[in-house]
Image 1 (cartoon, helix red, strand yellow):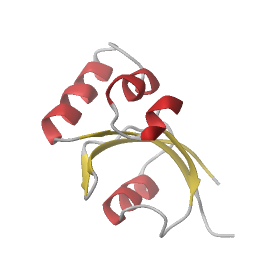
Image 2 (cartoon, helix red, strand yellow):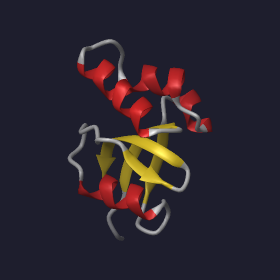
Image 3 (tube, one colour):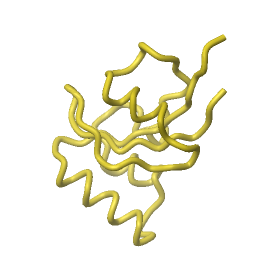
Length: 94
């Protein structure tokens, strides 16, 4: 079986908003999951941004490339796709 990663994300309309959310997390003003519930425009926000496990070819290319290159528990810088700007947290891999 090929490698899969599990990731959560926060989806917002612009890079500035994504950068602001990341800054707030770095200052311990909320967990990734709390920020996803509060700010994310994706239905996954109800689950703290959790997207579950996915393999290659299932997500937008820039999102997938970043998620597969990260370490577990790492939070990305803002990543742009056709859906908007994402902060990605890799939570597991198998």
